[in-house]
Structures are given as C-alpha cells and as structure tokens.
Image 1 (tube, rainbow, N blue to C red):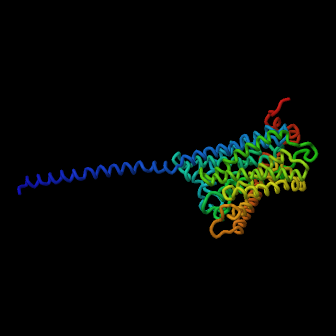
Image 2 (image 1 turned 180 degrees about the horizontal axis):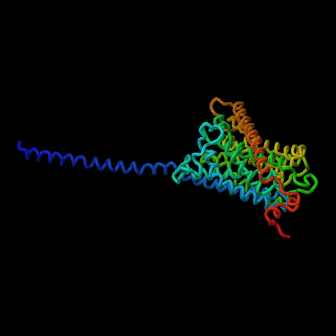
Length: 453
C-alpha cells in the first residue's frame, strides 16, 4: 500500500471517530454546564418558601411583642409622669441590641467557640462574616434566622426594664442592657440553643422558645436590679397605682398575639410542631387567666383587670419552654399552676420581703419561667399527652435535667447581673436624683410629657 493510501485511510478513520465522539463531547459539555448550574439550584431548593414566609411573619410578630406590646404593658403599669420614659427605654434598648447582635452577638451565640464552646461561641461570624443571601439555616435563609433570633435578644433586656422602672437613669439602662446581653444573654443562648458541644444542649434540656434563656434570665436580672437600684422614693407610703389599666390590657393583648411568633416561630418551620406550639399558646394562657381570676376572687373578693392581664403573661411565660413538648391539655394545667405560683409571689412573697419590683418582672417572668422549665420535664410525658422523652430518659431524668438548667441560669444570671449593675453604677450611676424622680422621668430625663392637661 502506498503512503498516500495509508494517509487516506487514517483520514477516513479520523473522520468516523470524530463523528462518533461528537455526540459524546456534546453530552459531556451539557453535563458540565448542568453541574455548574446545579450548585445554586441545590442551595435554592434547600430553602422552603412556606417555612421562610412563616419565619418572616414570626420575626415581625416578636418585634410587635416589644413595640408596642411590652412598651404599652409596662407603660400602663407606671405612673403617668413616667409613661414616656418606659416607652423610650423599650425603644432605644431594642435598637441598641439590634446593632450589637449583628456586630458580634449572633457570632457569640451561634458559632463554634472552640475550647470555650461549652459556654460561648466564637468570632467566626463577627459582623455577619460569611453570611450571604444564599446562606441557609435549616430550610430558611440564614438572614431570616438571624433576624428572628435578634428579636429574642431584644425583648429579653427590654423585659428587665419593668423591674426598676421610675427611678433609673436612661444612660444606665442602655449601658447595662448592652453589657448584659454580651456577658449574660449571649452565653445563655449559646449554652441552650447552639447545638452539639454546648452545655445545656448536650444535657438534653427542653427549652423550646426561651424559658431559661429569656424569662428566668430576665426575671433574675430584674430582681437583682430592683434590689441594687433600690426602692422608689415614697414606696409603701405614696400612691403608686398603675395609671392606665386600659393601656396595660392593650399591651397584654398585643403580647399574646405576638407570642405566637415567639413560640410557634421557634419551630423554625411551618409544620406540625409549630401547630402544636400555637395551640399550646392558646390553652396554657387561657388556663392561667382563669386560674388567676379564680384565686383572686377567693383571695380578695374580686377579680381584677390587673390580675387577668398578669395571668395572660404568666401563662405565656410558662408555656414558652414547653410549647413544642407538651399536649394542649397538659398546657392548661401548666399555665394554671404557673399562674397560682406567680400570684403567690406577687401578692405574698414580694410584700413579705419588701423589694420594689415595679412591674413584677421576677414574680411573673422569673417564677413563671421556673415553673415552665421544670414543668416541661413533667408534662412532656406521653402518658400526659406530651411528645415523650429522648431514648433512655424518663420523667425523673428529664426533670433533673430541667432543674439543673434552672439552677445554672439563676447562678449565671444572678452573679453576672450583680457585677454588671455595680460596673454601671461606677461608670454613670444607676439612680436619678430624688428631685428628678419626684418630677417624673418623662420631664427630667427626656423633657417631654405623655399627657397634657
């Protein structure tokens, strides 16, 4: 065969090979392009639009709890000359904590703290580093999770405000709350909610929406503050009745509505657990209101609007840690028990020891949170309509875990809060002058009046 014939043969073979490989090359190219497009598509598929919509709604509902709910609830409980000061404290504290949360709070609460991870997170998400619109937390965008948890970080110090209302400096409130979330709240949120390696998470503690992190934490800090700031001038002698039970009722109702975001939103999804938390928020609160009114009727002869509103908060607080673990009937009993104990502390213990907790932050949030946290371990039993316990843990074991969690929270918050109040007192002072207090904080601290005659 001549050289030309050989070359012609190779040419024909090459042409045939090229024809056979062309479809395969095209398929490979299409596969490469599909793989390139698959990454963002997979990330997008991980986000559930229904879950995201519910969590966006829940986040706004929790903000509604603070502004205007909590602000009006507390505002109605103080004297008219201090109405604006309470509104101002709730508003500015919330705004300040929002900034702190995105700068370093989220990182300390929900990132890995390395050697200290048992108690606190690290700085890997400082200034929300690495978080983008494509970041996912479970089935929702991470930004939505960050915003939802941010509202929890805002409402907890705002709750404390009610304990020392009517006699504390505005600058002291803001400084204390910033320090408090940094050294008390963020570590507590990490220990309970951040995941494997964190103290109470590894214990298996039940705290669905913040019995320890929010309510016991705020209640203990409020009690310590009420004692360290001191009693209001004229306490026990002057008339210090709430100036507007109407506003308190409006605020309590707003809190109840917003609490569905607080509790049902803590499922982090639009699912059956959220539904369970929602109905429990109805039934526990109803049980608490009825119980408070019945007890008050027998105790003082009449059921009061203040008592009914206090029952609302007591039931909501008690069911917060238990909302995703107990059944609706168990929630009624849990709310009623919490209401009875809160009534006892507000009407008996507070008077016996003589501390001035203006809005009964410890008596309702602290005691209600303790009852709810421990009661979660009892009413979670499947025999009582709850969801049951983790494998190998019975009622006794779970109750002991709950008690340990309560003790750690009280000690962590009590000691930490006392130190921080002292630091704030040394820097800016805690109390306004007697003259400013008698004039009212609306005028003396803010130069405004809530009402004009």
